[in-house]
Length: 190
Image 1 (cartoon, rainbow, N blue to C red):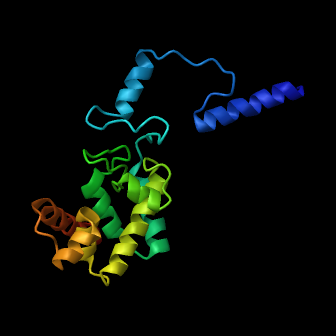
Image 2: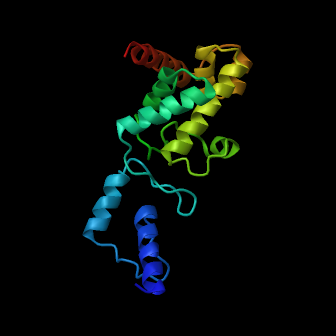
């Protein structure tokens, strides 16, 4: 095997792993299969991420989410049941979720929050769960370990919780806190 063949083989393997065609490779013309695949990975009710800023992740197996949750729970000392409860209520475990407000990924990080946490691709489950868990940790610290207030701040922002000294009187936030705490009880019971 000559050196050019070896380089080509390495480039092809890198392309397989990354999903990016090797430099100079012909770009496939989108066909029926490509369109169907894109639609399956990005349902119509979940807008695709902006081109060039992030790439949508493939559906994430539950075991992988569990592993990410446990890993980050250990690192940031956050109850894994709380992390799962936030993910369940924010995105229903959909790594490609995008809210109407622009929150992204499993833990629905707003772009500004994601950037402040060092999350470059909020649709990458590993980055998203790491950033979201780190953010939860900071909220728990800010509200002296009060889970209810930390969850309210995750939804409405810490300023709103500080302004009212409790869960803000917003119906969305009050429902969110109730739902997350209800999920927390269920996940702790598993």
